[in-house]
Length: 134
Ligand code: 5GP
Ligand code: ZN
Image 1 (cartoon, protein in one colour):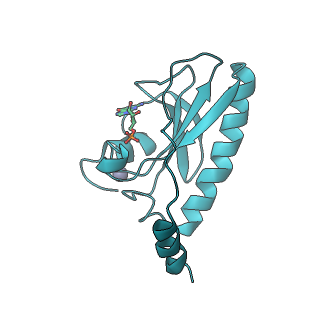
Image 2 (image 1 turned 180 degrees about the vertical axis):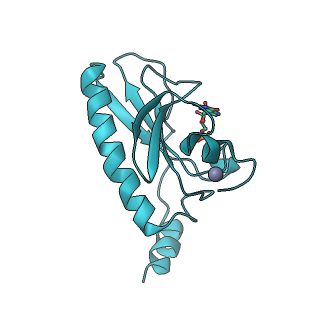
Image 3 (image 1 turned 90 degrees about the horizontal axis):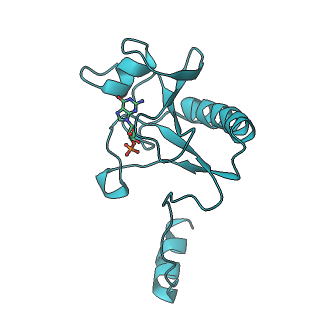
């Protein structure tokens, strides 16, 4: 637990939250500033600032719980789709430096914006990136 980390306090129950699910390792809460009806956050109890600090063990638990809660939200709220969003670093839109995954139910004609304008994959970028994985 990190001092002054709001999500550590929420995940451990020191600060009350609208909790949809809790187990030994994780808490799933409703986002205070929802992008859509049902917007929820999967928050590990163990502090990791972002994906790069997250243990493999916790990462596995996060996706399994996200899958279960996502299915229940989608069905229960009659959503038409759902985005999983997970921001790392200010440049990527992260505002709370404790790893969390967003579950954002989507509705036909909603105004949620998690999109981007498609670019073009250049040959030089492709070669550079593929080389990293050789
Ligand atoms: P990020 O931008 O870091 O990916 O997402 C942070 C999210 O946490 C935002 O969607 C914001 O609305 C939500 N949030 C920030 N503080 C609180 C809080 O105290 N309680 C709850 N439930 N959500 C919070
Ligand atoms: Zn924390």
